Image 1: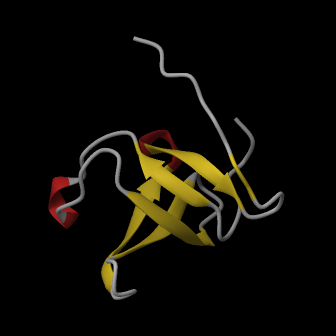
Image 2: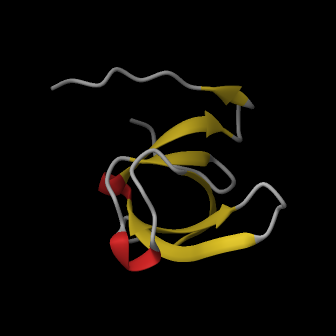
Amino acid sequence: MNKPELFDVIELLTDIPEFNLRKGEQGTIIDDYEDGVFEIEFINKKGETTALCSIPKDKFTVVWSSQTQQWLTFVVTH
């Protein structure tokens, strides 16, 4: 996987109960802390922020690239 970039859309690979976030929820990268941790903003359908939290890159996958402006596909292995 390429390095996540600012404004990429991510999808959670796991629940994050301390922020009431569930696997599969999508958010946007708004900061990169250079240590493999990214600040992610989650919003509701009204555009209101519902969670703003630092998440390590092993807890999410990028589903939309801001650089190419394309949705990405990935294969889930069991």
